[in-house]
Image (cartoon, rainbow, N blue to C red):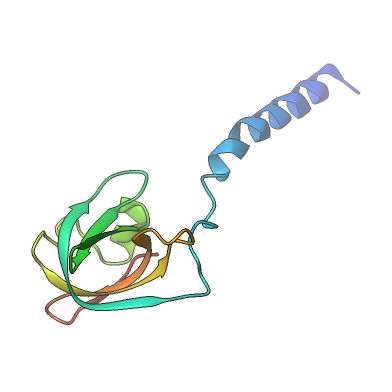
Length: 121
């Protein structure tokens, strides 16, 4: 094997090694994807348009649910904008709950006050 071929192989292996951690962002095991919860007429408490994930906090009664969404770029591709929802908005939500029972989960979709439906993933 020539030295140039060996260098090419080593550079390729090095690039693969460096890129693997970026691919393994995180697991969705914390969400129970066998259960879907739907809330109608809940109030948006906060909407965090930030990386690596957008978060929506919604209040049902005295409980605030923290719902994880996709990244801002992923959400833009699904029709979202940084101001799609605002605190005080009444919305309908569908999400996978957290397995540990805490109030939160993975947002699947939202129906806005004007009837528009947006997916979160």
